[in-house]
Length: 431
Image (cartoon, rainbow, N blue to C red):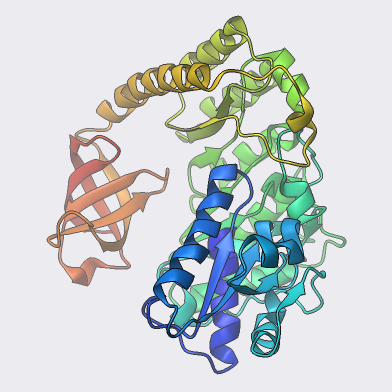
């Protein structure tokens, strides 16, 4: 979501006459997009403000903060970080050009809601990639998990109209994009106010209907993230089975394997519910990669409850796992819990889970050596200018030898080697 927000902000500024600078060292205006999900990210953003203001004392730029930290802290940021000149809340992205003009005269904060239609026509200069595009379908969250700040920083769920989403996807296809990611805090919670745009498509949920509608545009690849287990329906798996361009990857954050911890997190499901979703995914006629998120050290998590999480990871066979040590966020219910897990214990559990996942993942990746996979050539590898890099349909990173003429193509790559966090292969030809 942050990448998408940054692209929209940059596009609006470009259309308003601003030019993108090569770095913060030469920019007249510096905007830092912030995340408040973890305390570390918030502190990092404020440190960056300090670094820029200290290094640019002679020709100080206008510094602004946008995103979740801006929404939560508002004008108080002017005291926390005096170098900040303007604050842009999560619903005020479309007003950034006007806010910058005002900030030239005085400090200004805008925490208001969205007033203009969703900015979907992103200028090419503002795109992070010329081959992969992010398409927001839902903003906000209604779940109010006890550890999460998102419902407070992003507000309640607001689903974009299906016809608006489909128009954007068709436009991206016409521009030559090969892959789109339907994004939102909880994409499978998608509930538009009307069915305009996908009336003829069947589905057990609005989201599975939307998946079929987007697949019908003919865009070569469709991915989506993130899904919420409580709203997950087996019809999503069926839609993937029915449409080759719906990619075989599902990210489904479980957060814990303990029913008591899940209840304390207010996740709204039990471990057995999650296992049923996993069985549906693993039982598909197409091989679907499953990835997840887990929080270790939630307040009150006992050793036996952590062991339940270890058992879940061992059973589910995640092909990728994002592990986080619990970080208290001011304003959330969990921040008031007193039964904290020691930081050293969090670290120990993190490392134990990481070790287990590495074993599970290596076994899965080893089975891919010698097999051919379709890889979208997205760019040049960071480690070798002779290699290209891209993602498979199941969201695995693959590096392979190839000329720049292959960029933007979906290439048939035979996997020849397993790296620590990626695969390496040889190009067999364009698909």
